[in-house]
Length: 164
Image (cartoon, rainbow, N blue to C red; front, side):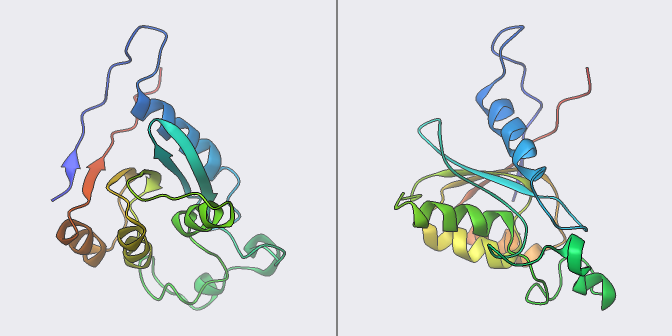
């Protein structure tokens, strides 16, 4: 079962908690996304240090969906279904790939993500040794949640801070 985290009060009036800090960075990373349906950002953290980031978009050097149009929209494929019919990689996949390219182990890391991972990303995160996943937005994928729970990965749904 997913834990629901209460909004955290900053450590001091002018200082963010670690969860707030990493989630704000994750939201900033999502602003690089080129998906026209959903902008997602992911940050992998170990020992309170960012080790890799990722956002959703097509493989390096290929045209973005903003240029080509969205195949999933054209085919009326609902969110959470038929992940293979998409030009893009998910933010979590790109974060894992970035770590691999730079030879950085992510075993034991925490994933911060703007959205709950899908089942494909969840399987990758399980095998990569991720221990904790903290996310804000829900995603329509119950199999993902079931597999992450079965793997013993701690799931924490963070509540976005209220606007100031």
